[in-house]
Each structure stands twice: as structure tokens, then as C-alpha cells.
Length: 320
Image (cartoon, rainbow, N blue to C red; front, side, top):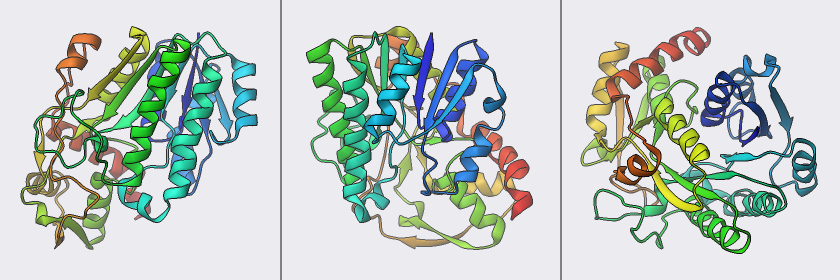
């Protein structure tokens, strides 16, 4: 069976591809290597996979309908992990049209193609950002998600709604997975662990909203996320929305203290107010994931950050 991964050279996509190859699957990766961050980082992510005989790389944009039609016709995937997206709540404010075109338009193209093929499972990567600034804890899949705080979150909510529509009309088996603050080796340079560590190593200050006070994030290690995505692909649910998080929010002041302890570097913090695009806490209720997917996150924040730091020292530090 062929597995199609969009955004397959990115942080999560490259780890997912590695895991699927390890268990013997045929993997087709789509990535456009855009300049949201250095494309060479993505190429390093897949340096080993690209040498594998069961791995195919397609350099294309999911918003290019002609290219996507050719991919489906050529490789006839049975499983789709749709991870490609313009990422990040704050950057989306400056480029809402681009975020809509890729995150909504690209998703519609993939869903419309999927209905013409015998897709056994379509997993759509959404985000905890769809919950907005709610006071109900932990975040549960049945909570209202009608007040997104950024264009990015709004496009992901739109993708969820479209996924249901295509399931309803064409019986495509679709699972929406809402990711909670994924971190680990190969993490994007704009994400908090990389950004903070990189600034600490360079002796530079970094912005920490509210100085880390009363600010919590449900950090979820990459291996746990990949395990959850593969379980969603394998389970072949008709349609469902499932949180994939660690269910243990970390106070950001503690997060920074852990980074200092693990790396041996000092954090120089610029405390600024929380922007309107961000919630003060993310906290996943993962009971549904446990029930339907057998999902049990196994990596504690201390261990996950140590793994990240080991990767950073090997892959990034020599270039600093």
C-alpha cells in the first residue's frame, strides 16, 4: 500500500515518513520546499529517506491542481496524511490570503482528488489553535471552536469543516487530528524550543509572553505525535476529530528553566504581553485518542527536551 504524505519533508512529515518506511511501507512525499524557513533544513530532514528504495519525493505545491492530479494518477495512494500547510498563528496575520489559498484551497484539491480513488484513510492535521481562548479545561473535541484567534486557526477550522463535508458526500474515511505544540529533533526554527535554545546559545535575548507567568503549553513530543498519526491511519475511522497532545501543560517559566538546566546556557528574557493571536493555555483531553487509537503519550518534557538538545548540538550547534 502507498502512503502519501503532504508536507513530507517538514518536521512532522519527515518523522512520519521515517516511521512508515521502517515498518515496510511505500511512501510518497510531497513538499514544495517554500522559504518559510531555510529549505535546506527540510532537505537535511529527508537526507536518509531519499536514499530508500520505497521512498519517492515529489517537489510540488498542494495548491497546484495539475500536479496533484498527476501524483494521484501515478501513485494511486491508499492512505493520505495531509500535513502540508502554511504554519503559525502570528505570521498568518500578515499573509491571510496566502494562508487561505494553501490551507483551504490546497486541502479542497486533495479532498476532491481523494474521492476518485479508493482511499482507505485520510488524516488531516489540524491544531489546538482552533479552540481559541477558551476557559474550559482540558480542551475536548466537542468544545465550541467557532472563535479562532488568527487566520491560521481559521483556515484549519475551515479544513476540518470541509473534511466532514467530503466524508458526508463521498464516504471518504477521514480523521482530523488536532496537534498540541509538537516539539523534538528537526523542530522548525520558528518554534519555541528551537528559537529559545538558539538565542540562548548565541547569548541573545528572546521574547517570552507574560515573562512565562500564567502561560502554559501542552508540549507533545514528536514520537508520540507520529505514533498517533499512524494509529489514525491504521484505524480507518469513518469520520472523527481527535486531540493528539501530552495532556500535561507546562508552565513556560518552568520550560525555560528546564532549557537552562539541560543546555547549561542562560536565558535572557524580554517579557511582553500575550498577543491577541495566542491563548494563555493549551491542554489536551486525550481520552478519546486513548479509546479510539490506543494513544498513550510516553515522553516526558524533560526527556523530550534532552533529545532535542542532543539533536541541536549535532546538527545546528556546529554552524552557530
